[in-house]
Amino acid sequence: MNSITRRKLLARTGCLGAGLTVGLPALGSSAETRSALRQPDRPKLKVIVAGGHPGDPEYGCGGTIARYSSSGHEVALLYLNNGEWPSAMGGAPAATRMAEATRACEILGARPAYAGQINGKAVVDQSHYDEYLKIIQAERPDVVFSHWPIDNHADHRASWALTYNAWLRMGKKFTLYYYEVSNGEDTVQFSPTHYVDVTPTESRKHDACYAHASQTPDRYYSLQDAVARFRGIESGYKRAEAYVMQMESPSTALP
Image 1 (cartoon, helix red, strand yellow):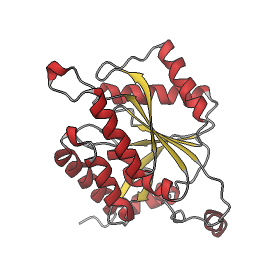
Image 2 (cartoon, helix red, strand yellow; image 1 turned 120 degrees about the horizontal axis):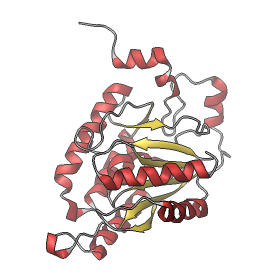
Image 3 (cartoon, helix red, strand yellow; image 1 turned 180 degrees about the vertical axis):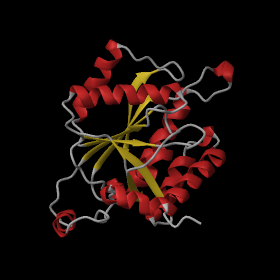
């Protein structure tokens, strides 16, 4: 059997050395960096987790969100739409989806925000670029998480395009990370650069995902938890959430 594991390969290429964990020093970081991360007067961060629908940020980043909020950072979950499907299709109404999102945010210590688009009918054009940019500018984030560009759901890809455009137009001033959902089923060709140990916050992530009771959480949480356990094997934790950091982003530590 080949003794070169994925972990060793990442370490050799420097990717694993860039990985940061919530509340813990970076793997392979310097003593100065570790000291800086422990400073009690470290500035609080404004964090946005963008997603196509209510539930996406919770499934992809729920453990990380909980660790940010537990450290006193401000987190907003920016949903591209309110998740409503036409009643003829048997979907939950907007009031139900938004109430579920509010409850999930309460569990994670975050707040919900909406970009005002329609579920399944995402639009990416100049006017929507401008509208979305105004939302991001008003938030003045330090860190933004968004869907991976190669997701099978069109709303996810639209969320990425709008977020990436805002990052460019704001002069690349905030750190941009990409996250995965239902890897292999939705997110594809995802090769992480950073990992966050979410073992301590798995129960809050679980409860936040199950707050979306209308969205068959038994199926989706089981799949996402399998992803978290696999990412934990890669990074040396019981469970982890994995990210790709956009090149040219400022160096902002995960929480």
